Image (cartoon, rainbow, N blue to C red; front, side, top):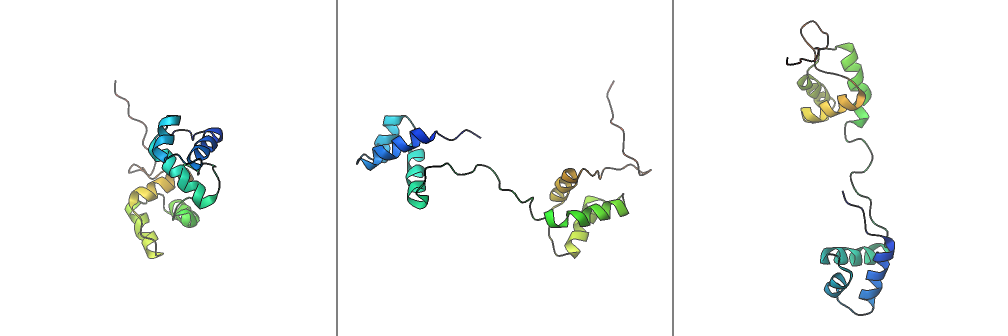
Length: 128
């Protein structure tokens, strides 16, 4: 993601528009996109501030964050669970998730679900 425009530029653009110039004129004058000027004026009207909004996803860990202890206990109790079996176990607790979400949770928890038939992790295969 790109960096937000500096507050100095933001305040100059808003002052230019407040003087009676159009948003398009301001975008040409300051060499920024018309969308930036439109969004900036909306932000000023809604919040009264020129501070840029936070970029990216918020914090919280998703809908599986509350079930991380449950998933960790299930994996430690029965190490050869598949992602689909974990999905079914979570479904029994009222959470409908895709197996990719469960895989990301296992990765965040530092757990592995890839096992071989002996119950040990497979070694990395290297091509000669």
